[in-house]
Image (cartoon, rainbow over all chains, first blue to last red):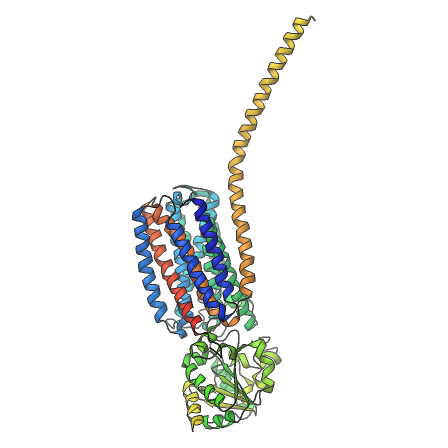
Length: 467
Length: 135
């Protein structure tokens, strides 16, 4: 295939990728969008395979790699539980990072393949781009591995902090820059690998101080990095498709990070410095005494009140996902709807462990997407709701975010559940949420605590409703 | 000064002018030769940078239009398409200028393929679940 044709094919693929993202503006167009994405990728791969000068042996090797990798990817993606989606995405990001490192290495040892010079004498501008792609790719890899381990429970979600941590990271960052400059000046192969190792270490060190519940930001950020890494490699090998796609992905990740930070009213710097959410459940228990009595109810009480309500808003949080309560929650909603009750769902931007995770879990439990609402849409409706059913969420409902400037969550947008006539909190105990802040709503007269496992409590409500 | 002397002098001056012109032409050519690689190195980079920045803007506006309910599928799709890095891996392996580069290209193609298939399939699974009240 002539170069012009290849370039045209890449252009078509770029447009298809843009359409794939465009489709996600609505659930109905999204499925078609995903198909566009697949076609775009197919075109890109085939056009590259048809480039002039491709050896038959090389093509055979690639097909082998695609067959092996494709089988593994298909196997994992068809079997993964939707609750494990965040760690899957983190793992996938690490692969993009590692692939960027490998392509940078390939470009370093065979610059002729990409027309950027000959081995040992690569253009300085290409070396700059190569080292950037390499460093970002390596950081993406090790950072994503840590994010995966934290999300998958293979290591504690608690922040790992030690003295001088941020100075160490800053020092390593500066050292990395110096090494990149030296590498561009000399084109030395040893420096290439030292940069890679240092960037691996840096990615690792950057993510360990960040707590488990800040992972939505981290996952979004690493998504962004994987895009920048691809763009860096695109610059290195002078490939427009890589540059365009990298920019799209980089922008997507950056926007998601921004939305997540805004959902917690924290700056990206604050999140990255880490240390937030060190466990302090004891503080809440200690403060409980002077707050007056907590009203605990039984599932039967809850079922009775909800049956007689006309409008119920369900507020699911990460606790619902942990307890796998989404299916039984939808059963409860179905029964209530049969009784003529209007049921809606309210999703906070940072509910779950990755952006939009809660929506997927509800969709999996066959909750129609037009019953699920975002914070800004649903907040005005709590005032005329009879019941707010908060299941596995806590901090995102805490009015202290609006009233107490001293609170760590002050300024965070919250769901106004306290405006509902009755608030149910399904919780295992009185422990505070991730932010370590006590929720005054637990002590209000119109709140009823339903203590127990989210799934078990909801199941008992379902049984009571069926009677 | 007689006319023949004048003519000889004019001829000598003309020849000198011609020599100077020739020298100027050579100098200009040399200058052009020296300038060419600089221009060639700067322009493609600027070209790529232009495309990159414009694509950032396209990404920005398209992604702000993504409904928050579909942010997880957005991650799945971006994950899959960022693996278009496989193009670099294919070139390194297929053009086979060095054994080491072929090996790295092979590994990169393998990892990127896990992502391409995994990313698109898991996104498809997610999107298939989103149904409206009617459907």
